[in-house]
Length: 539
Length: 85
Image (cartoon, rainbow over all chains, first blue to last red; front, side, top):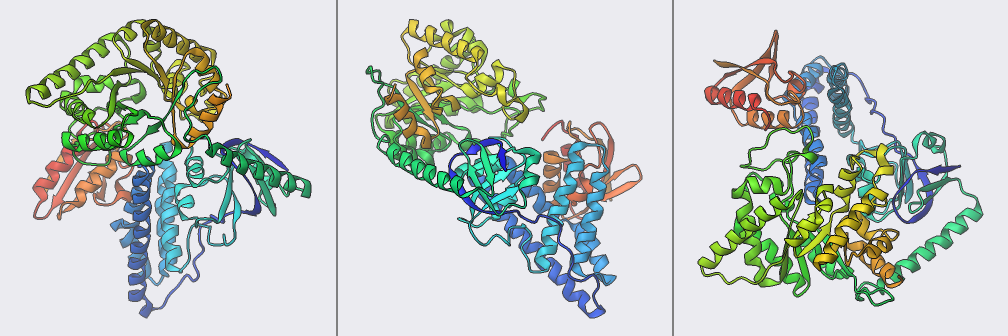
């Protein structure tokens, strides 16, 4: 049987099928005797502690990899596990001679039923969270793992309706050869995990998965978005051949890591990396980054109760500048919106944070936030080749206002005797308005960088996270290409370079189109750099 | 015993992020604290009890008993009546 879905993480794998058993654990026994009450309560407290400990590790791991939203889910789980009311409900049941595991399952079920009956969809869905957590405590009490993955003992292809963060986090390294899920999109948790684990994944295969759950063997093509259950010998042989070819291709790409990307007619295309934090700099250089086309500065501001000081920012910007030396590093000023908390910034709830007070809009209104960042960037210029880029610009007034603040920061520093190098300022073209006003913006900019992810979302009025809008989530759309063309033409007239720093920059089929429109810099997730250089070299 | 009536501020009511913030603050006080809504009275330090308890615009009472009761009621009532945060 053939399953088709979204190729969420590339690569090939053939292996035994594994279907995690995710049902609620059954209590081993329901009743206890009078003298088991006290030890039972102690066992319950220990089990809660063990579960919370496990959750804390998961939370730390997610925080470190920047998955703040998922970390929030597990924090909620940890709060539930430690809940004093849950503890007293369990205590009462155990005193009535229920076994601790039966007690925690029953108490959990009561709360779950309460949530499920609520008339709010979000709250009703919390029922599953309560079941998940109390199930984990019960499993811990019975000395078992609760993940449903305990039976996963040999390297296998994991088939599941969906895989939660707690699932993938519990899989031992090397035991998952590939993921195939009924639900999900390229941006789902499972897809992100698969890409970072370097294993193939096909997601969103739909109800067809049910027919595949009894398979013995599954062949997965994560590049094409294809899974074949119980493949015949020929198919397996074909997969093995393709797998070898893929390994060869990867090896061949290695040659391109450190070449200067140039088209066959001699046009130089700079292939750079997008960085989410200073710690990624070395890795990016290893992949062959010729600069940083987008250095996101948000990481400095997240997961803390205060704002980063100017010096702290200076250290981070200097570190990246030093790592790249002569190579250009484009620092994007803070781009957060109402969907993220910032200490000391008066944010209000917004129904549409992506259309809200964010990026340069927030920075211009919040000098206490913006000025230290600008000063830190300016000071760090002495360590390398830094450029400044402003996000979410909609018109030239915003750009002029931002540049004025930059000049003010420069004047302030120079008065204090700090010597500063030249620093170029550019604009991120990510609103349709910026592309349409490109001629005006080009007069005030040293470069453009097209943020295709947001440009696509805003141009096509299609939410990036909405799985049903997949068709409208690509830069390869006439409307988006027309805006990119407009920006490139304006830049050409003003004689300034144009880069692209969205997903499209690393997509082999988009690269020729972008270059033909006049783009001369491509910035992407670092692992895509060798392939992009190869694509450029073959043009 | 100290108590104060207030109105739920966050758009989403008491759940998700506002609930987490409230819980964190509540756990910082040693007093026994309850939220009263209509004839329901729940432990303010229980995520299972406070989640979904009230929606935006609904009236609730924060009641506390203990050493830091006054401060607890002030802090928590302010927190839960703010629009967001």
